[in-house]
Length: 364
Image: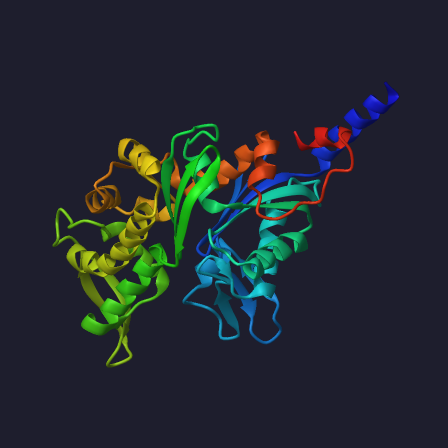
């Protein structure tokens, strides 16, 4: 009885001073959900640093607001490129700040976290993310493939024997995963995403309209005028401002929905090609399941207008967008806490073994 009370007391203390987190760290956005509190961090994956001292000036939304208007001794960096760590030190600093913001007021250490990784990520790339999480004072980190987490978060049951297909479109990556029985049957990750649309818009306006614009302006054009299918009103336009290529002076032009649509086509074709390539490699029974069930879209890129219709035409399957698609992956990661056996089965890294059976109670 004394031993039981000791374990119950220790469990209560752990819950009081630590957090269990689900971390979806992407090239464009980092989302962190804490058990019992929901999504507590939803910030751009950028960090502003002093070029001279290396000091962190701002992280996330505050750093994004500086982008394009930085002080001369400040640079805004996106430390993750194409879903993997490109700048290890900046990734560490950014994740550390996000995790600290996610913790409750009295918590300084997190027992555990489930973190998403791309399909096909190398051991070196995975280790870089794992090290960044450990640097943020997280005791145990489980790495789970993004496609499986997105499927669970989109409503696919881990016990479902029939196959389901999920297309997760992020800022720099598109992850296509087919899952059945709580496992990935086939997956394919392409380094193309919604940020490529921003780059295409910027390039088109510079080449053909003689105006250089920044990333925030390109994002505004994508959100307000962007479409994966021909726009209903091609002449719809908004005025945007930037720098004239020839004179170097400030300038302004009217940009139409038709122009923005033209910029999205090459990116959408790459997304459609990634989906078709994945579907072409499936076993016959899995393909039959998808013929009945269609495709589920997740990720922030799935919010592009007309994307359901476009992919439906390209794949000849029914396509639907998951509820709150931006949070599907982190939602799925969080659900894995409720199924510890499934979590241990699908984790890509080897977490430290539990000391004894009684300690397993702390995992629930």
